[in-house]
Image (cartoon, rainbow, N blue to C red; front, side):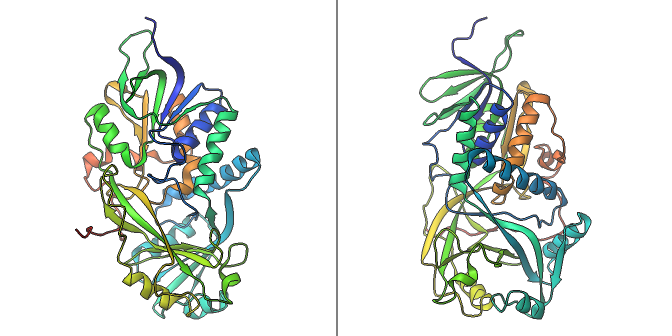
Length: 413
C-alpha cells in the first residue's frame, strides 16, 4: 500500500522546548524528522518563551537529580554546537522553615546523591551572602553549586536550529487535529493529520504539546490525562539604586527558591539590568484556548516575603514588569513520559505535565524521548515515576510525604 503523504521516521508534535530538544536528538541520530507547531515558532502562548528559567539540582524527589546533571552536560554540548550561550551559571540557594518537609527532603536528597551542600542557619546566611539575603531564626538555608539561569526563547531557537542543521524539517502554523494508527500490517506506523488537511506518515510519533497535550491525547484516544493548564505571572522587581551589581548574574548571588506557603523562586538580575525576577510558583487553572490573560496573582504574600528577605535593597511596593506564562500541572507535579499504548502500542510517545519545573531538564527529556521511540526504552532514568498508569492506581499519582509546591488560585470574575 502506497501512502499519499510525506514520509518520515519520526514526527514530533509541538515545538516548545521538549519537542525541539527531541527533534534535535532524533535528527542528530540520522532520523528523518518532522517537527510540527500549531502556532508560529517561538510564540508566546505556551510554556517555552520568555527571558529566564532557573536550573538547580535540589529536588525533594531523588529521581530528578540524574536528569538535571545530564541536562547540564547536554546544555553545554548544544551551546558548543551552536556557538552561543543559553545557560548562565550561578550557585543555588534554597531556604524555608526548618520543619518544612519538602526542604528536609531536599537536604536528604543532597546527602543521598552526594551533592556538595551547606546547611546554614540565619546568621550563617547573612555572612555567606554579605547581608543580601536574610532568613528568620526558625529557617534554614541550603547552598549548592549547581544553579543558574537559562534563556528560554533562545534555547528553543537553539534546538530548532540544530535540528535543521542535522536535517530535520520544521513546519509551523500546522495544528495537529489527530494521529491515526495505520492498519496496514506491512507498513504500520501512524498518520498525522493537520487542521488544514495535510497528512504525514511516520514510523513513530512524539507528542509534546504542552498545555494542549491533554486535549490532543483525548482527541487521539479518548484518554483523559490529569494535566491542568495554569496561567502564571512572572514578576520583576526593582533593585534599589546602588545595589544593582550585588544581585546580578556573573557575581556570587544565587538563583533561589523559598519553600513553604507560598513557594517562591527567583534568579539573579540578567535579562533586565536593575530588575530581579521573583515570582510565585502557582497560578490560575484555565483552558489554554480561553485564557484570562491576567490580571495575575494577588501579590501581598510576595511583597511581604521580599520585605523580609532582601534587607530593604529590593523595592517591595510592587513589580515593575510582569509576564504571563503557562504551566501544565499533574496532581503529583511529576512529568508524564510514556507510550500512548492501546492500538498505538509503542508507536506514539507522549510527554507533558512538566508542572512549571521541567524546562531545565529539556535536554535530558529530548534524549529520553528519542531513546523511547527508537529502542523502546531509555537508560539512566526511573520512568516508572512518569508512567500514565500511576493515575489509575492512585488519582493523585506518586505518593509523597511532603508539601505541594504549586499553589492554585481561583480566578476573580
